[in-house]
Length: 314
Ligand SMILES: NC(=O)c1ccc[n+]([C@@H]2O[C@H](COP(=O)([O-])OP(=O)(O)OC[C@H]3O[C@@H](n4cnc5c(N)ncnc54)[C@H](OP(=O)(O)O)[C@@H]3O)[C@@H](O)[C@H]2O)c1
Image (tube, rainbow, N blue to C red; front, side, top):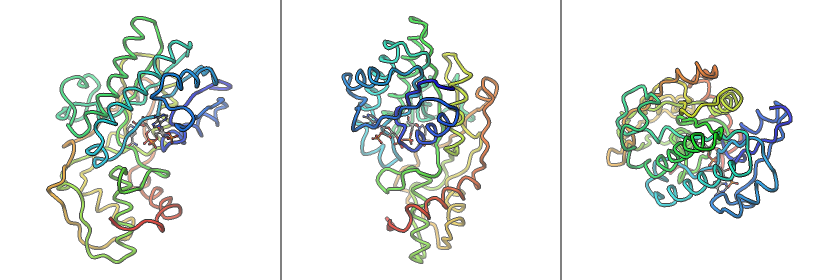
């Protein structure tokens, strides 16, 4: 990485900001453009970006995403923005002679009923969970494009399938937060206001796997340095937790002692999620370092210092 020109799209985002820090510490010359300057849905802007910076490596972390509520309300935007950004950034990476392209993909690309743990070879065996499908399918086309470019042009693109992330600097707003920041906001506010109950989406039975954001960034940098094959690679912690247990854990860490009610009318999302993480360990030696409780403690501490006092319960 030393002295390499690395473009990190979405480098000002949650995951991107950790990527930028690791790459800079390795001596890379990192460029992290904002959407206001270069809108990656526009071919002329993407051209401008590559002409301006002339990257040797591209880590494409820019995306439109969000929690289940945002996914339900924005299927059209999620499909269009992501497929346009991915297609253009990958195509321009090829045309401008980039040495390596790293596609940041998602667990949402997996079929709704994938056998647990999810293995990379099962990725194409069914349609994704409906709420996630526009986002997950747009991401999956980036994998297909990357594989096609390796086959036809010998272009060095790789694709990583990330599980749900959490950690400091996440989005905690009610409208677009993922499950962990959403629960931290809710439990923290309820504890502060001494509420006797909170209501959570679904029935608590769905399971999820979570990866601490700094570990995810480390995995992406390791794959960038050491992995050069067309097969996708799962990036996760390998541990699964039921949402009900997760809520209890976050309630404990935020000091909320009231009752937890479930809104069974709202969706659970995909029933179970846990990745087989063998390939990442074997191919480039990645293993998550941060346990869920430790990661949540750090996230709650960051939230309390940076956000918590300004938001109300919703
Ligand atoms: N968070 C998760 O749990 C999770 C799980 C699996 C995979 N991922 C993937 O990890 C990556 C990072 O996710 P994140 O949670 O860190 O997202 P994030 O905080 O929302 O950051 C996404 C970034 O994408 C940029 N972006 C969005 N639309 C753009 C556009 N039209 N043109 C240029 N840039 C645009 C934004 O730039 P500006 O800030 O300048 O607008 C933003 O900084 C994404 O590819 C996501 O799909 C995330």
